Image (cartoon, rainbow, N blue to C red; front, side):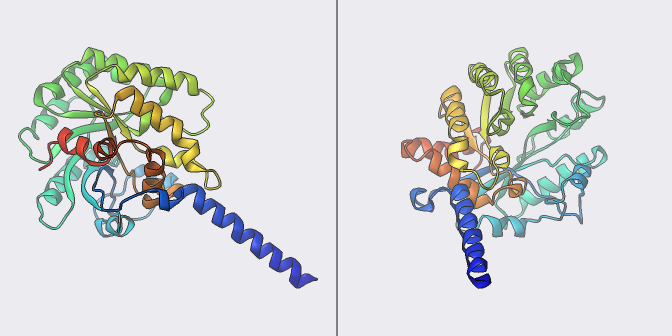
Length: 317
């Protein structure tokens, strides 16, 4: 009798595990052709021999070195042809060092990293000199400050110096990634209105989350942001809000399609957000989930999402 119960337990555990895998990878048979090219517009790397971002101390699953070799292993078989590095919120004194490392990496001939978005602090003195130093760079395409952290007060992006510096980015031809709390998306829309000649990228579907109790407000704010032609939306990050036992495709279907509907198929781009996505899913799991969600879109629109829009927006050769 004891052996029978033990076997039942094992079978139950195996079934539960299998269900979780299916929920996160969304029936891989429906995904489609693996030869489809992908540009990952949100590639994180933190090689502890170079940088150790302070925030990782509170993220035990992520608090280890990640290198380009690790990224290649995580994306194997997915035809990721190019990447755009995304800054990793290094300590402020390492911002320039990170940016220089990105340029040097992009210049090498044995990497998929084609461009980078680097860290900045637009609300602080010295910003103008910092960004002007990258004028004419073939590889530094834009800048970002993470604004959903406790150290970034609400409304920071609408302060006079911040706005002045956002206008400068537009003058210099740089983009700015908006990574903001979902309840502050109205601030992002106001910033876009105040800086009409600056190109903005909304990260992580506006930091949307599965089973968000404030979903209606998020929907309204995304609709408004989509009306701003100087804003594009990055379809990224949302997989980390799905618990392993949930059906990721069904949980995220509305978020993804609402963003695509609001911004249009010419203003959305795929982002992997690896290795942050590893909190709940592999890189492959996220790609499989997103390809399942958009399975009924025309092939031309899927190619825009996964490749063409990024190539044009970042002017990648």
